[in-house]
Length: 237
Image 1 (cartoon, rainbow, N blue to C red):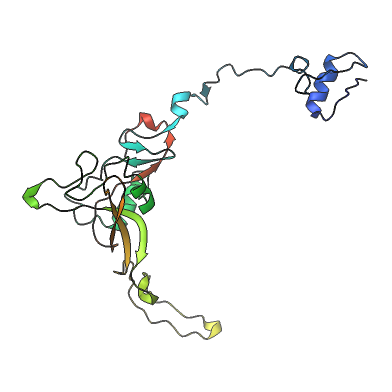
Image 2 (tube, rainbow, N blue to C red):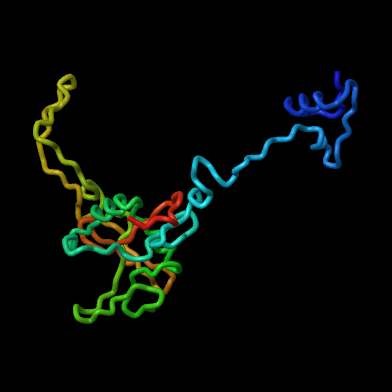
């Protein structure tokens, strides 16, 4: 039987030491009060540590697509979503949330968008720097201050008018066991004027609040994305 003077040791380590030492041997610990590594079994090294499941290390690295800006743990489109002629006037909050999901991302919050102002050329006032912000320079259709849609919602009223409603469908019935009368049908109100999204602008690279607009009102937007494997090799969308 092997004598090991210092405890505790993991069961696997004890077994390994017993297999390598003579009976009644005494193990001297190293300067860190651990069993010397030469007495422990060697762990076989992976022959291809840079390859897993047929994918190389580059493909497994999480990164941002070339059309986005790397913001650490997430990515943000470097440009506003290019609304087509067919989509003009349809790009409200519901459209933007669906479009960003179609592209594999999501509509960024007000905090995310305003916080990224120093890294991304956000929409801004006509007096802002064109080098760091997206400003209106086409005078043929007027010059206007710009803002961007966010995924953050607010309400401008209290009570029942503060939110939307799915209404009551035709054919809805009350609970007979509880003696409930049949409810009166009424139309849904999924986009009330009181439900609004926050907008932001560049504000000299500091980010700023630009008020809110009804969810049914069109506005410019850009999408955010989580980092994905091999994104550096892909094009957005």
